[in-house]
Length: 339
Length: 224
Image (cartoon, rainbow over all chains, first blue to last red; front, top):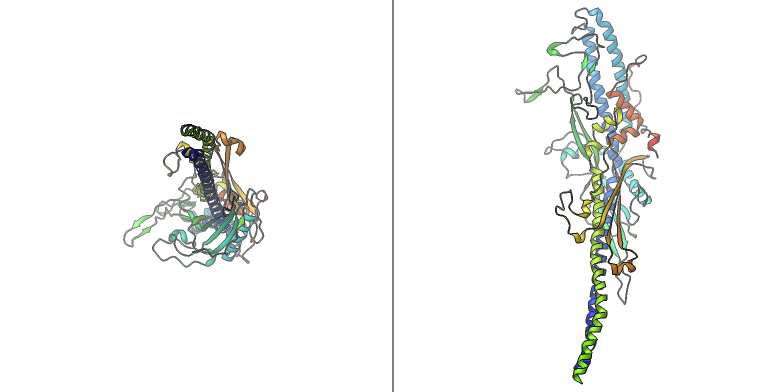
């Protein structure tokens, strides 16, 4: 009797062990698949969110470039006007006291002034053209970019064909980021109330949901059907100043050329080496020269006349990821593709 | 008689074990392979993920700066390197802050993982856009493989299991690209920072009668 019972006693144990091993293997595989798809969906959401607001940041970067060019021109015009005044008075030694010889220099300055104003006019018109971008356009463009990302899926500039993309929200940004980065209209020190900025110059924020229904790796067996897994990625991004510069173009050297970004300009045509009070050469436009000194009486800075400072404060825009901000996702608020 | 049965039973168990043990071992190899595969598949996606982020914000002072604008307008364009995830992220110690320690050999891919990327620009002409839009673009691909146990190779059709992840990242175009692709912007910037030599009569100074509003025209070479 004992012998009969003993026969085949290891087979059920092996069978159970084998079954457990198979379940373990499939579970590990399925768990890996779940993680992989979860990250894949999140990658797709992050990439789409970053790209969606790039149109807004690109428009603002264009504006910043034009504004800088215009400010260089303004600085030049100011110096030219100053030099014209001095030359017209025969001052500053352009003719060493002989005012009649200042006329050719004055004419040259006037010619350069007219050309500078013409270039400045071009800059201003260009600024007008690149400043037409509005917040509603940014919102519409963001949605169109994401829709295009979906439509071009699988192509070099498209998204992930395995997921569906839904823009759940795109609006102007409110709160949370450091004021200096947040503010698109003025240099605002953190801790002070931000400036009131027109909507069209308020950075936008966007939230995107990606979703994929992933079938199980193992099809149903016996009476058990593994459930379909739903991978959901959720990402938000906003336009932000990712780099901010305080640059003195005449002083800071361009590493490519080894020369200052904005070299000094001599308007005298080499006819004079005259200098005015405090050593200032009226006919040289020096874009740099940070000669600012603390002015203790008014707790401010004073500029020496021979060292007027041309400071350019620029901020360049790109998109950065932020935490999703819309709260819990409402059921049905996003589409979900079967991968 | 009892002894005889007992001896036969022992032999039966031995035969059953001899048959079941290899099958069980194959299943266990399957478990090991499944664990390695699951982890590697996830890590490949993670490498592509951080590659995408790095490429988007990899070198902002070359991508977004006056340095980039000057280079594109009047000098040699500043080319920002295409940010790629370090391959060491998958094969051991990473140059990134975390994970600081190399992964145990068991979790590493077999062979050398491949990381490739392509950065550039793309033009979106999607319906609903306020106009054709120039965008920065980075495509990052990470490939890795793990070994399939010998006993399972027939079932899985090869000695290696390939894992692949690709991330397409759109971003704000770098300033060099932005300036180079809009000739009017490039020309105006270049003229203002490096005034051309006087030629002909100076233009008459006049007030702006009507502010212009037309969008900037894109250079033909950037339309493709």
